[in-house]
Length: 389
Picture 1 (cartoon, rainbow, N blue to C red):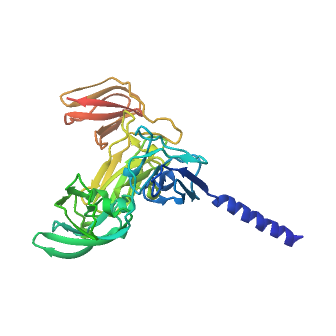
Picture 2: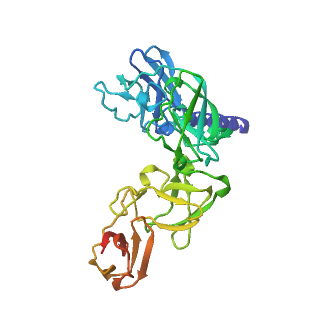
């Protein structure tokens, strides 16, 4: 009896496992003349080149996606780039889809013709460049990574020459650019508008005159950030170019006893980042008006240890905005700010979110002398933008 019971449990476990890994099947009918089909959406991080479909016949393609759910949004492309995205019959944008047993694409922005080749790319760059990375349509414009770190070949009077060999399924229309470091903050600055370098040859050469920043491995260090966040926040995440802007890599902060959160980011020079109260783009930090807060930046060693303040969240886990407008009487004169009827305390931040002054009191608050400009004032947990004259 025990043996039979054990066998039943084993079969049940196998059944549950099969149920867990069951996939959604996406099947789509496409316009005649389509030569390939891709799917992009929440299931693959909206990467246009990540997921090709299998051709069933001249107008039908299909794919099984194990990690997809019926609520995930997506669209189709005729090739591995956004320029091949699907369109409505009138050329307008298609509303993001959710799973259907059978989809129909009526039009493409452009029809992709495969051109599968290995191409050697050479770049002449300024002598200041220490390392060079390639990013482009051939890998879905993923952030600079070790997989596409270029090889240093030589140095001339005109600069340094780096090279790399990449495989592209659309070599004749390939788009790419360079980064002088392992993040988007090091991307090329000149030229900055045209990155269409498609070629009919198997080798192509490009000249880049300047970059936004230059990474030097010998000048990296750890940037330590302490973030003051809205009351009640339980978890805080940081995401930025140093993490590839990939939410799967979001770094969670350590909560301190005073309610702040700490982050240590090693081996960086320059970073661009934002905070989130959940590892999801919708839960990004917001300004006092409830709009997304501009991307923050920091550099080593100037910002090796910094303190910043998150005024509010664009959305919280409860779905309730954290933005509350302060109604206290506030006025400024001679570069001093006065706040009346304070109940617990006042905090003053500059427009970048840096804490300028704070005080715990009841009654009337008068600041130290401030520079002229806009400030964010938090009074008893509510905020208001004030111009100091």
